[in-house]
Amino acid sequence: MDDIEKARRKGFFLVLAGGILWGTSGACGQFLFEHKGMVATWLVPYRLLFSGVVLLTLQFARRGKKIFRVWKTTRDITEIIIFGLIGMAGCQFTYFFAIQYSNAGTGTVLQSLATVMITTVTCIMARRKPYFLEIIAVLCAFAGAFLLATKGNPGSLELSPKALISGVISAGCVVVYSMEPENLVKNHGTLTTVGWGMLIGGVVLFLVFRPFTMDVPVDLETVMYLAVIFIVGTVMAFSLYLEGIKYVGAKTASLLGTVEPVVAAMWAALALNTSFTAADIAGFVLILSTIFLCVADRKKEKE
Image 1 (cartoon, rainbow, N blue to C red):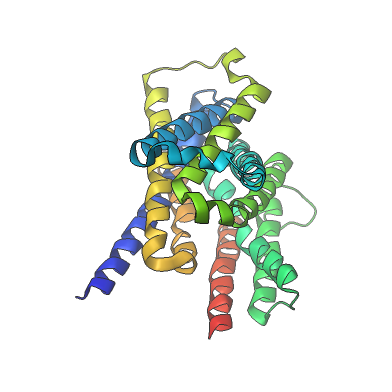
Image 2 (cartoon, rainbow, N blue to C red):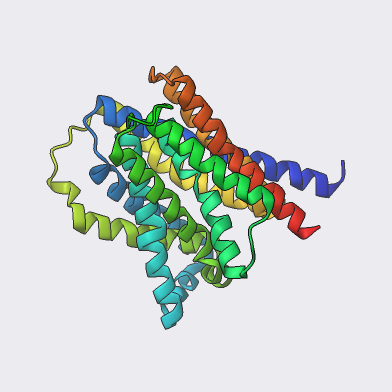
């Protein structure tokens, strides 16, 4: 086995591990919402603050004062604030809010609509018509969201409107998270950018929701689940996934990342006794298929 193949396999493992940890984190959030009286307005501010501090501390140990260079130019300051408020705070809060009012599988799958949104934005920015497979992907996305929301009955809304709206908003925030910080990542590195984004988002949400005023009982079991969300599902997951991208590329990573909603749904079904209807499963398949369709068309574009 040559070095290139070894590196590629390493990248596969790292990206898959990151996606699995993200999916596990979502299921842990569902457990806290259902059994510990937790709410997203308490969980997310603390999650972002803790994770941001940990990532920046690790980066400071590696790079020293270089991590503060992001605050030297107006452009970087503007971009890191947008990234922190929309890409991080907006994405994480709406994601866990969707889980709070549905379940880990549904919330994560709704967030996967970001792939179609990114493809649409790319078409607009490039001033080109969408390819055939991109059109099919959009139709699949709408059909999947329809099935999740109505269970196949047009006359009813089975999924909580709060879950549906926040899940779609979460997908929109993922677009910002994925596309906006390109300049920041190029100039300052991925982990430094993510660390500052988490810290900014955490501080703002902390001031807005004031979680320290909420009466949320915290026992040993709660602490264990929070540790999984904060350390395993955030710090480790981001680090593994972003490290894996270096070896397999963003296109392949986005495809491998589909393991996240699958893992979240499996944990919800097996460990949390969440039931999914045939319409739910069909909706999952349709939405997840959009990722494969969009990746296939990006490959076609490069050929």
